Image 1 (spheres, helix red, strand yellow):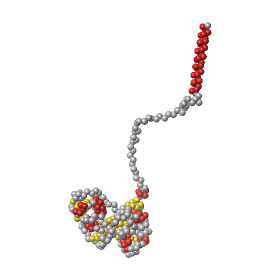
Image 2 (cartoon, rainbow, N blue to C red):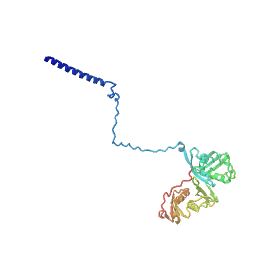
Image 3 (tube, helix red, strand yellow):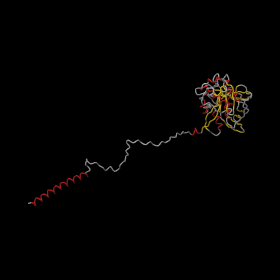
Image 4 (spheres, rainbow, N blue to C red):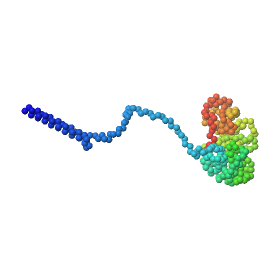
Length: 354
């Protein structure tokens, strides 16, 4: 009897163990079921991105890189060159002009072409109230330079002039433009390869021309002295005009030119001297490449603007004598001693730059 109870107990334990094993097996099968919605699919988590946590940390500043600004110059600009050409203003004066033209071999011929009416350079400069002195269509057929003499052969268009004054200005402008070049001292003209005695209205061209008598006032006899005056301002800008005076040779040409400047321009012109009314010149002393311009006591009332205008034209007039430094005094006293304090006392003025 006791033996039967033991066997029954063993059977009960065996059945319980079997039931537990079946539940565990079902759970394991469920883990492998692809359609089980309660289990996340980890098959895609094969690649990982590591992100550094920087929250709350200040970003490091990037190293400072110096920015270098560059200026691009076009090929056309790089090939431009400065020249001094001569034009005519509305008052009939020949005017020197600083300008730029494309560089080319034979720059002297190119300079003359820029002075022909209707040329590209002349059209640009004409917007400032100046005009070319060479008749439209004039061509430079040839040019030779030997021993300081420049012989220029023009086409027949150069004969298309209307007055003797126009021809005088034409010859003056050609001569001054060419003698700006250090290898040229004298200019001779040909027309279609022929040496003519005169131009259409009688201006003689049967000789060589030198740098003299630009915008001459008075007699051509004696020594030439050039004084610059200021033309009236236009909508664009004004310009400086050289006027030639002839006189006997003087010991101090710088003082003579300053006296002419302070006296004022010829009365029959619209020019001015940029010298404030009432300012008188006492004397001028030259020491090397410096000039001391001594003014009367009235100059103590100069404004800075009036002073700059006066200084500009004085410096311009004295450049022709190699004066690079100009000092102004008042009755022998420096401006500072006289109580005047102006800046940029020796700034060279912009000289007819178009």
